[in-house]
Image (cartoon, rainbow, N blue to C red; front, side, top):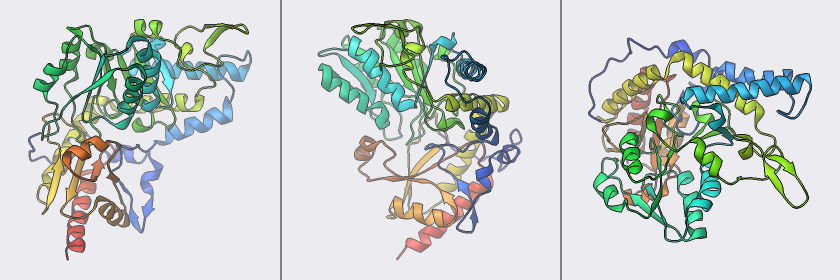
Length: 417
C-alpha cells in the first residue's frame, strides 16, 4: 500500500467517543497508561458486552431449547436473537445457516471433518496459501493424512500478496476445496477474495474463508462474496472468548455429516441408531456457550451502531499513519506491503529480538505481540524466527501511535551497544 500523509486526527471519526465504553483501557501498566496494540490476538470488550454476560447469569440462566419454563424460554429467545444478529451482520440469507462454535479453529475443524471426510478422497487436492494461520492449516493436514489427499499452496510474493500466476497453475480438475484467510494476521494483507471465488466457481470448487481477522474490521456480505463457508471468532470483534461462528451455504449443511454426537443434535434415539435434528442444531451438540452467544450479539449491536464502513476507513488512516512514522526508524524491516491491507503491522527492529522488544514496550505500557503468530511457515519462508506485531482497532488513537514510535526510538538506543 502506498503510504501518504494523513492528518493526525480523522475529521470523520473520533475514537475517544468510544474509549470510555471500554473499562480496561483505563488500566495503568507499570505506571504508564495502557496502549493496547494486540487486537489481532483478541480485542477488548465494551461495558455493554460485559454487562450482557452478567445479565444472562443473573437474570435468565437456564439451558436453551429444552425447558418449558420462564428462564428457559427467556434464554432461548435471547440465544436465537443472537443467531439472527450474526446472520444480519454478514448478510446471510437465513439464520439457520449460522452455527455457533467455540471459535474459528473449531469452525474450520468442523468443515474438515463433517464436509471434508465425506467429499474429499484419495488423490484429491486442497488449495491453501502459504500465509495461513495454523488453524487453517493443521485441520487440512490431518484430513489429507486420513484420506490420502494432497495439499497445494498459493505462494506469497515479497510484498505479502498472493501469486496469482502460481495459483492458476495449481488450480486443476483434482481441486476439491480452496480454503484461505481473508486477511493475513501477519502481513495484514486483504486477499482479493471475489477474484479467487470467481475462479473457483468457474470450476465448481467450494471456497472456505477464514474470517478471523476480516469480519471484525471489514463490512462482510457472504452473498456478495459468494463463499461457501465463512468462519470467525467472537473475541476478535469485542465479544467473549469461547464463541465463534460457521456460516455455510444451505446445501452444504444439508449434505454434511454431524460433527459431534450428543444432546441437542438428535431428533430421535434408539439403542442402535439415531436421527438428526434440523439445521443448525444438528451441528450444535451439547449445551452451547449461551452467555457467549448472547454477548456476541451485544458486540454486533455495538459494531453495527458505529458502522463497519467507518471502522474500516478509520483503521486505514491509523495504519497509513503508523507505516509513515515507522518507516523513519533506523533498522526497521516491515513485512508485507500489499496494495490492500488492514491494521496489522509485523516488523523487526535491527538485531533486537521480538521478545526483548515486546518486554521493553510492556514496561512502557504498550501491549504488542511477539512470536511466530501461529504462522510458522511464513517465518520459515522469510527466514526469521519471529516478528513484533502491532495491530489496531477503532479505539486506538494517533497519539498512541506517536507514543509507540517514540518508545521504539528509545528501544533502539537501549539495545544499541
